[in-house]
Each structure stands twice: as structure tokens, then as C-alpha cells.
Image (tube, rainbow, N blue to C red; front, side, top):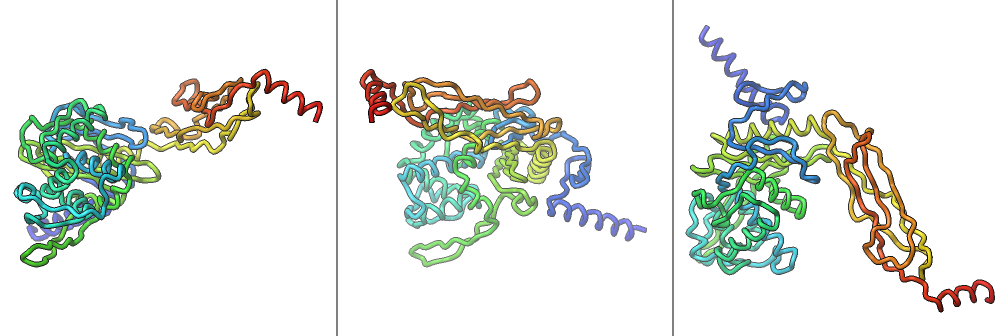
Length: 400
């Protein structure tokens, strides 16, 4: 009888593990939820704070104590990565640049890729070390390369956080080794900087999706390979996972900013202060599946908008117009894309018209509720006809 019981227990465990790794099931503290059969999801969380947002709009889909001040651990590196890609975009550095490891960078503890003093690696290799293996030494290397010192880089981090309105965040280092509450953030602030990174620099996914990759250490002692292994196990466990960053210290406990994309819906799930690494992954999965089950994305790229409008009393008869961005709206479980009504309004315009001036409006409604508006703007300046312009115009019309 005992053997049969053990066998049944073993089989159930195997089924659970297969489910978790197929991405079709996940586990909370009470039961296995079969998302494929659309069973109810128990929205109970053991983590200190959680937040789920849709990436393109920033719309909050679920939250629990999202503004609670917490320790971020290595999730700190999301801001470090933002500044690295900011520098690349500004052409201050490039992926091919070679960075030399300082003695200070080499001395970092915690998660590291074991860079040696004087060792040289490219910026791209160091990005992989930060993203995949959460290398503290690699983070400090890049901080020093960009700002001259970690202290100066941390100041840049805090300025960037302020610009993103991350009101509960103060950074004291570039990698999250500082395990005191002087170095702090919140689930909402983590979501804000995660969204900034993935929407402004989607190339980050070229690195976050790496499961394992070897780098080569080149030192005076010779060459040796080191294997980078992704700390974000969702990359293997969940078919829609795309990133982003894990973290853990004794104070922060277990944290995760998880990104995933399915059917054009891109989500960010933030878990802060999970009691163990299994809970941080299972609760992130719970949030992501909740989001994918309950929302859909309405996207309009406004290809039907006119290219120009007639101008009265202008030196040009028409003005080129444009709408600056597409419209995205997250439909909840009670809304459908077919419920959205789009109304385009073009204004009657007289010269002068300045470039950037509003010449129309697009309004999106569900019933009588306005869910969004976009401005249609002049793409160029059109000056008003002068008295002499009128005379010339009449001359060519009747005399030529």
C-alpha cells in the first residue's frame, strides 16, 4: 500500500512539473490552476507587493501594495541598463567598445561573472553579463565606463528615476548589493522603469531571451570560458515570457520583473518580497495569465487619416497633416474591440497655419464614454496670402 501511495504521489508531482514547464499550468499556495480550461484564478499573493500593467499603455490591471517601499536587490540593474542604452542611443558609447575591468569592479561580491582586474570585454558582452547572469562586477564596469565612477553613475540613475516620476525610489549603487532601506523602490516604480526599458529599447529582448551562453575571459593567465546562465527561469518555463530581471537579498527576499507577450498584448508583472524563488515565479505566472485572460489590445495605426487639408486664404491651397502616434486601448473582460467607435473630425482652417498646430481630432468612444483622443496636426507652415499675392492670383486666373 505504501509503495502504491508513493507511486501516485510521484506521478502527480511529474504531472505538476510538466504542467509548469509547458506554460499551461501554474501553482499558487493552494492548488494548480489549469489556465487552458479557463478555471478561476485565485488572486491571493504571499509576496509583499505585486503589480501588473500593460506595457504599451501603462494601464494597471492588478495591484497589491504597489506603493510599499521595498528593497529592490538586483532589479536595480533595470535602471543601469536604461542608462547603458541611453548612452548607446546618444552615441556616447557603442556595443563594440572595449571596457577594462577596474580593481574596484572586480571586488564586487554577490552575483558576478568573475571579471579579473585589467580584463577587457566589449560593451555588448558586459550587457549580456548584466542581463543574463546579473553580474555585479559587469554592472560596475559599465557604470565606471559611462560616468567615470559608480558614484557619478548612481547620481545619473537617481536623476533618470526622478524624470520618470519614480517617487518611491532612491538608488545607492548600480547593482543592488546595498542591502539597506536607504536603497529602495516600490513595485510601481519597478514597473515604470521596466516599461521605459522595453518600450524605448526593445532590443533588450535580444539579451533577456538568452538561456545560456559562453563568454571568454582573456587575462594574463590565459583564456577560459565562463557560462552565463539566465537567472529568470520563466524564459524556459513559460512560452510567452520575454524577460526581464530577477533579484534577491536577505532584506529584499525574492523579486522579479517579468515581461511576456501574447497576441500583441505585452504585460509587465512585478513581484517584490516573495518568500522564496518558487513563489516569485508562480505568482508572476499567475499575474501574467490573469492579464492575458482578461484583456485584449485595440490598436489603430490611423492609416485612414488624410494626408492634407484645404486651406483658405493661404499661399498654398493645401497643408500637409499628420497624426503623431497610433492609438492603443486595453479592453477588459467586459469590453470588445467591436464596441469601440472612432470619430474623425477635420477643422475648417484659414491661413496662417503653423507647423504643429491642431487641425483636427480623432475621438474614440465606447457608448458615450470617451476612452481616448488624438490630435491631428499640421505637418508644415502655410503663410497667409498678402494683398500683392491676391493681385497676382487674380492676374494669373483671368489674364494669363
